[in-house]
Image 1 (cartoon, rainbow, N blue to C red):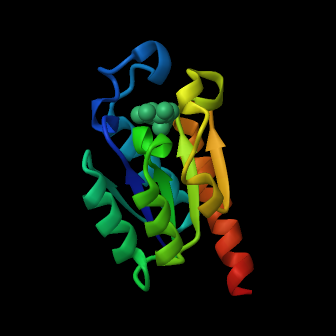
Image 2 (cartoon, rainbow, N blue to C red):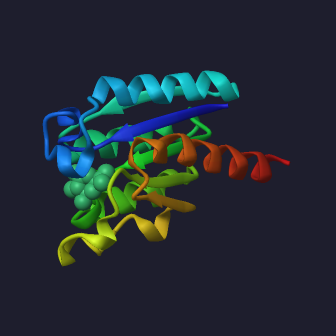
Length: 147
Ligand code: DQA
C-alpha cells in the first residue's frame, strides 16, 4: 500500500513556529515519526511539504493511479482553498485530513474546513500523534474498499 503524506504552508517551520500550539519538535522529527510508523505497519509513505497551493493541487492530482491514499494537512489552505477541495474531489483518492492542533477550538476563521467534505475522516488536536492515527485510519478504509 502506497500513501502520500502532504503538508501545506508553514509546516516546514515546526519547532520554530508557535511552539505553544505546535510543540517544540521539528518538521524532520515529524517526518521521522511518520516513516517509523509506516515501516512498522508495512505501508510505503512518501512525505512532501509545500508552501504553494498550486504545487499541492499538482501533487493531489498526481496521486491518482499512483497512491492508494492521501494524508493531507492543508494547514492554512484548509480554511481558504476551493482549489484543494476540487483537487481531492477530482483525484478520487481516499484522503484523510489531519491537523496537529484542533482548529475548531481556535479562532473562528479556523472553524471552516473547505476540505472536510471531500475527506473520508479528520484527525485533529492530537499533536504529531495525529499522523500515525490518520495513517491507520486510512489503511483500514483502503483495506475495506479493496476487500
Ligand atoms: C494546522 C491548523 C491550521 O489552522 C493552521 O493554519 C496550520 C496548521 C494544524 O496542523 O494544526 O498551519 O493545519
